[in-house]
Length: 269
Image 1: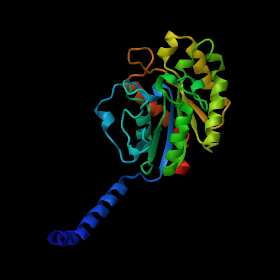
Image 2: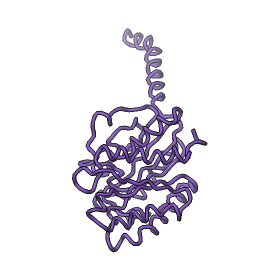
Image 3: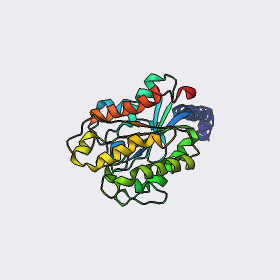
């Protein structure tokens, strides 16, 4: 009886602690977010070497994990190839926006898949190297993220895998189809879609990459609310394929500058 009596006496205190813990947890749930879908292949996923800077978090910048939960954003944030994931443009992109718009809460939706060609970004397409469905997975993740905010932008960096004599000529048309498909499936007809060109080092070793870059730079002429950032002057990590850490961050700032200079977020701050 004594134990039962003690429990009953302590029950209100225990209940209070549970409620306090619940409130503390709720404080960690992000507010309404401006969401950005990060899509493409390895240079969007990131292959730069992480350092201490990448572990610094900002409670106005969140990312959706593989398990579909929100956590403060840090690199590596993608999960396509765990053995090689690293620093990409996404985190610096968000930091640049957060610094420019002090009241903006940002939600990143990392969904890039290293090595994926643009044909892998079609509904139902299966990509064997990562045993995933790039388009379907990105769509599912975006719809889950929309429970916590509004879609503010698509960020696309891809094309290395399509830099072949067979695939490159059709890239522009396929890109337009991809843009239209994402916008239709996410009910986002006018949400900014920003693409980026391949690194100079890719073009240097593979002339077909120039065809891809031409298509990317011409894409704004064929797609409303689409913009292109140029990656000229950036450097690779020594493999002539992937941006090094510093260049990945610079690329992220260039993506952010499109939203800032074009005032694409002004009405949504």
